[in-house]
Length: 308
Image (cartoon, rainbow, N blue to C red):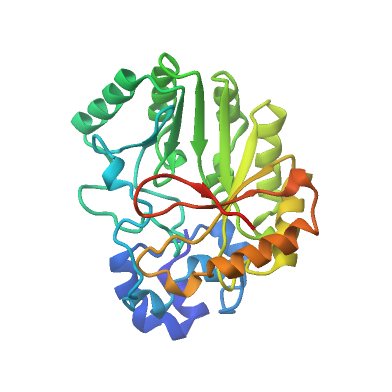
C-alpha cells in the first residue's frame, strides 16, 4: 500500500485535509493502482478517484445518508433484499482501495466485518429465502480470506442456482487473481464476476493478465462503471473504456448515474448531461460495447434504466 508520506509528497496541497478525510472514509491506495496514475496531477482521472479532495468535507444539500436505500431493504445485517429473485450479501466493509465517490462510504453502525452471529443469521436468511441468484458484495468480497469466500460460495450454491461476485480487486489489486484462485472459482460455476472500471487508464498489463485468466477459465466477466465528473464525463472517454473492455472479453454491463452519497458532490453529473453523453456514446460504439445506463434511487426500489 502507498504510505501517507508518499501521498503528501505527491500532493502537498492535500496534507491539511488528509487526516479529516481519512477519519470520515479511509484514504488507501494500492501500489499497483498508484503506479498507473499521476498522483501529482489533480486532473488525472485515476488520482481523482482515489486521492481525497477537501470538497469531501463540505456538506451538500442533496447528500443522502443512504443514497440507494439499502437500509430499508435489509432484513438482517449484511443482507440487502431488493428484488424477489436476487439477494445481495455484504461479505465485509473492507476494500483494497477506497474510491472517493463510494455510495457505501458510511462504515457505521457496527464493525468492518460481521460477527459470527451476524454472519450465521445472514446466511440463514438467504437459505430461507432461496433466491435464484446471490450477489456477493461489500466492501469487496475479495478482501476476505479465500477459505471464508469459498466456504460461503459452497454454502450458497446449495440454495441458489447462480452466484455473482462484485469486486474491484481485479482492477485495483490484480495480484489477487492468481491461477490457484481462478481454479477455485472455476470449480464453482455457474459463477459470474462483475468488475468495476471507470477509465481505460485503469487497464494495465497486470490487470489484463488477471482478466484473461478469469475469462480463459470460462468465468464470464462483466463491468460496471460510474459516471463521474472529471473522470469519464466525456463521450470519447466512455467509448474508449467500453471498447477497451470488450477487447479484453469483458462485457460493459452497467453505467451507474452517480449516487448522492455524502462527500461526492464534486463527482456528480446531472441526468440531462448523462443522457446527452449516452446518446453520443451510442453513436460511437456497437451494441456489445454499450452498457445499460441506470439510476439506483434512495427509496430502495432498485436500479432503473435511464432512457436517453
